[in-house]
Length: 454
Image (cartoon, rainbow, N blue to C red; front, side, top):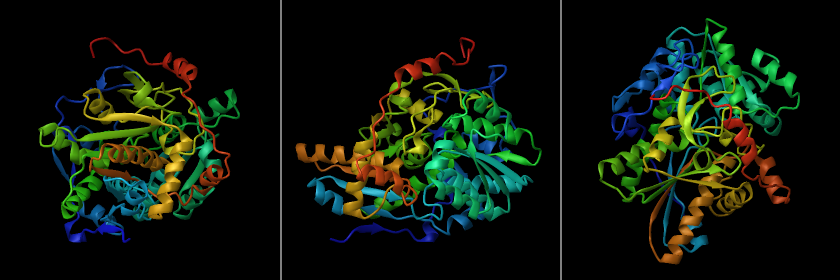
């Protein structure tokens, strides 16, 4: 059985990013200054001004600079696949499609924003950038982006992932970046945490604080983030815009869209260009399912409230579903999903009832990844294996009900650097982690005090 694939010509690649803020039924809550707790814009020293403007823009379409498009064309457009072998194995009438972002040089969707952010930093005169990374996909992507534009890069990688995934570090260093485990001795916040807990496994909240502290102490440096904030989600919408054209080629339209969420950029990049049809009433019954790990279930278990984006409280305060900025997640292999909060845009849409959310355990997630590998042949990263688990569940429901629904997967990348995780699963050593209710309760006690009425 041949896999059906849908290719776009490079001349048909989208030339604009889609901005959901133009079509939201209600505007996003404001950002709050971490010191004054008053509404604010992003601190100018952190991001290039173009990214600050995009963060708050209400323009529906924002042009992709030609210099960025030129680099995009080294791997874009990516291919849309029909997963016929998986459909056959499940004996389901459902039609399953997946947009595969694993063919970028970094192996994931992350370069879509990494290249754009490096371009804007270089254009504004930066010599250097700093960032954090969880599983290493983001650090790898930004290393590649900075390489293209001749920028130095310092990456603070969550220590547990730094030790679990050494090849991600080697990839970053090959592209010229300097990667250190976080918490590190290179920053004040890192030294403070190590003094309190020398065996700290790290977290994205800690790594973000270190990268921000580093950037704020240098005049030639911008900070870069790979998820959560509005301009990052904006840059990822090239994925969904391509997919819309490809689904039209397939004469199909999704009834269900499934994707994993850690900070939210991967899945938002796919579903935001579609959700405007749900908001407008063109496709009101479309289901959009966000999948997160049971070890860090911010959307499904966290309160919708104001919180810091990092552990040190250097970043702006945002309204989101959160487990508390001091929360340290369990060391699951899906390092890119180990964040305490969620993108404000996704939280806002979830609050409005426009998207759904589920939390899944690690072992059944890898079981789904192995089934996908043994049908479609792709070794999937631990993060998008969450998509596969829920997609299989939905496809089996279609079989039971005798319904032929169209399911679209946001497949963010390959798992070639994650084979140790597959080895643990295949050898029976992988374990599940329960929702750490007591640790979350302790972290939520540290939420910032925000004036009422905001």
